[in-house]
Length: 302
View (spheres, rainbow, N blue to C red):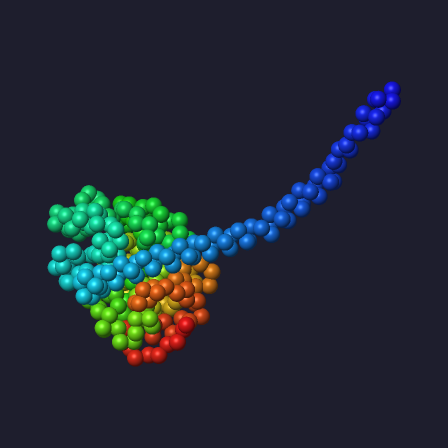
């Protein structure tokens, strides 16, 4: 009898329902406190990955410059007579991004079929290049179907800076541009080269391989002015502009007309010297000065 009593007295008391609910509540509070911290870490990693992409693009652009004695044209056109018409500046960097095989295929495809919007033979039109895809935008990691074309295309998170807008041609990358480092008299460390602008909600804009842009200028498609104008309702039924550097969203069609990033507070930009800086939206009034290569403006950001 004493053994049984001793056994019963050694048993642990079970948890009550109230105690279980308290424990669950404490765990819930801890998770709620932890999630924002985890999200901040993820955002910081994505932002860093985005900056690294632009650094590699900047290095490739300078290797191109060393070989060709100028930066690539923002958009190749020459009135439609260019042998590589519709080609973006990013596509021209392929040999300098360890994409020699795809570049060779591209050159052959251009000899076979123009315009370059059909695969085959233009396999690049729907080939995702990780360096062109910001980690913060999952849409760019696989080919998407544009609203009007209905054929899959590969996208980019980065557009070249054409200057103030599509008419000024005062930047580094615009239609048929051939800008040299020596032409950037404002200083390469003070002049924008490229920046973030996620693809449009319809995926009609932001193809890395080829495109046309507004009035066949490349505007909105692969290059963009920092105070861009809307001159073609085919892109979006939006006000004429101008559109300043400001926050945007993946759902707003009109955000296609200005630089913005899927990060909190600003976007990553590549400068003409190859450096990458995160610019906050508060500097929007200074963007035209940063976008011009030879405007004579003095801008001290860093």
